Length: 93
Image (tube, rainbow, N blue to C red; front, side, top):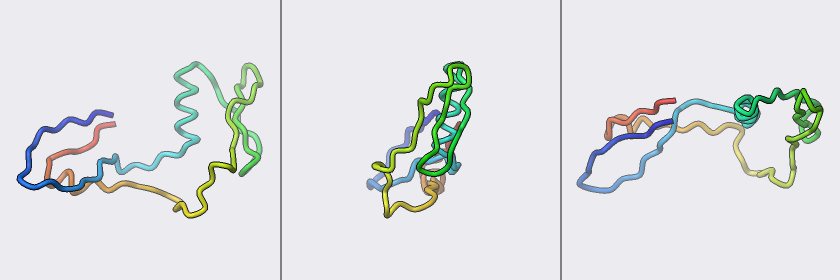
């Protein structure tokens, strides 16, 4: 991702800087493992799901219910339209 813009404003404002794309944690783990030359096999479901390295059979990713956030929404997706409109900024992925 690359964020590059240089624009001064008369008054400060809040902006959402986001790609507007939804990506799961599973997708992030798979991409990271791929960069390390690993292939993941997922086994189990829900809180019992684990990710295993196909070559070694070793489990290296597991769900930890201790990190569940009971008030979390199902999906978070940022809307950066204000940054695009006022700053001329758009994401590059």
